[in-house]
Image (cartoon, rainbow, N blue to C red):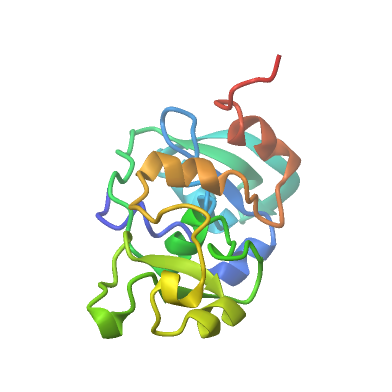
Length: 194
C-alpha cells in the first residue's frame, strides 16, 4: 500500500457528503477516530473491486454501470493490517484535541488559540511541553508574562500525548454525522459499564 495511505483518508471532502464509507483496519478498529477514517463511496467501491477491502455494511443505495449494479459500501475493512502511527504530530489540531478543545487557564470552549506557557520572549520553546490551548481573553491577559506574574494557573500540565491517549480523547468528540451502520464498529472496543 502507498506510504501516505494512512493519512490520505479523505481526498475529496465534498464527496463525503453523500454515502461516505467508514474504513476499518484489519483488526476491525477505525484507522483513525479523529478525524474519522472515511473514504468516498467511489474509493470504497474501487478498493472492493481491487480486493483491498471487504465490505461489511452497505447503504440502501446502488450505483450502476452498463454491466454492474453495486450497493454502496458504508463500512469496509482492510484485508491487510496497517500499523497505526505511534508518533503524534505536533499540530494545532492535535494540541486542541489533547486539551479537549478547552482553554487550559479558564476552561472556556470555543475561540481557541494557543499560548506558550513560558513565553517565547523569555526563551520558551514551541513544543508539546510548553504550548497549551487558550481562549483569546486568557491569551491576551497572560501576554508575555509568566503564569505567576499574570496570576494564572493551568488546569493540567502540558505534555506530549501518546497516540493511543489522543485516539481515546478523540472518541469523546464524534463527528457531526455518524451513520447507523458505523456505530457497532466505532465503540466496540470501549469498556462496557456494569
